[in-house]
Image 1: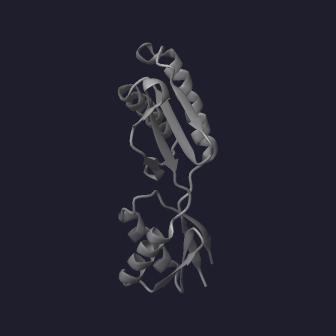
Image 2: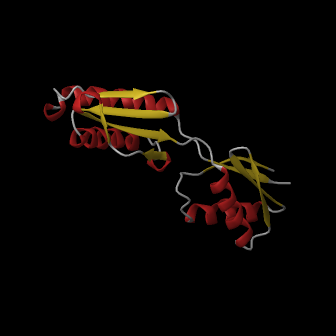
Length: 161
């Protein structure tokens, strides 16, 4: 039976490259030069620390532009509040969402059932598998899911006959 998987993945190497580019630009920019800005990254969360909240916002804007250039979906970033940090500085944590959580998976499965297309959806760990008898139905379902906004970037992989 033909099927495909709906996933939400972010290329961690591209994020790392964008962070390195951001660090270089922050070190060279006149308005951010002496702000002692730090950008931390532990494969799940990006932490931006700078002199004040305006500089944190500026660094996050630079980071977003670098991520967009590298085709990293910004939808998969969850921005925390800008908080005070040690020494009168400001900090913002940005969580990188990998995979589809169960609530989003249920929402996608519900949308698949409500579409009227003869396909079935099943949640498998952090992805949704959609299967049906006809390849055309699966392609129509991909188009229908692309038209919706689920709050995360979706990719359609493992298209099997």
